[in-house]
Image 1 (tube, rainbow, N blue to C red):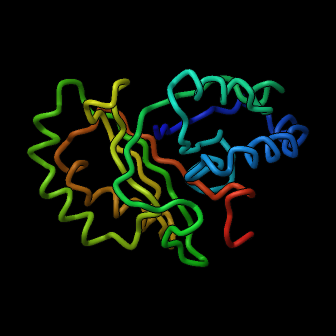
Image 2: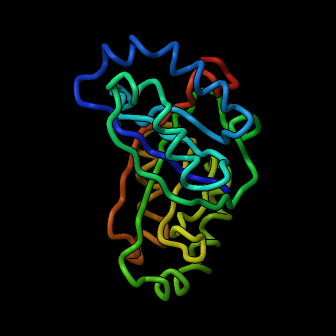
Image 3: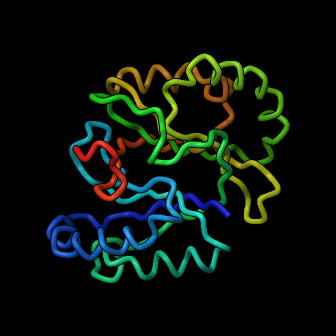
Length: 202
């Protein structure tokens, strides 16, 4: 099962991140075969690390929770909590083969639907899918967030590849789900490929 995992940094934990970075990279590398994407979430100006985000294929929620608990950044006190969602991939890419362009930057968008909004999501779906088709070259990955048993779509998660923040914001403002007021909460982060999962090795 695919899970989207967001782990938050403790404020001011930069020195701890540096202390445990090698252990973290070694730990992440051991899960390479299970990991579709992994890297830090960043402030919108791409200058400040705020935490980590990964999309990982594990058997169940308990396995994901164990994976987070064994993360060296968590054990070392650099990170303190996680947010885990079932997720379904709408495109087949991983970090190995995603349509990334040299010189572009990435943004991660994590949006949770308003309560009881399944009907609204369905009403907006055709327009949403048409929009996706028109901007398909921007997607590193995309797909719906799901409830615990995977039966209901409860949000959207995507990583986009764009020239800059202005382009990322324009993309999101024109998204039919955004214009249709589907979401109760939207988190908009800078993102970059983690060192283990950067095919360009920047």
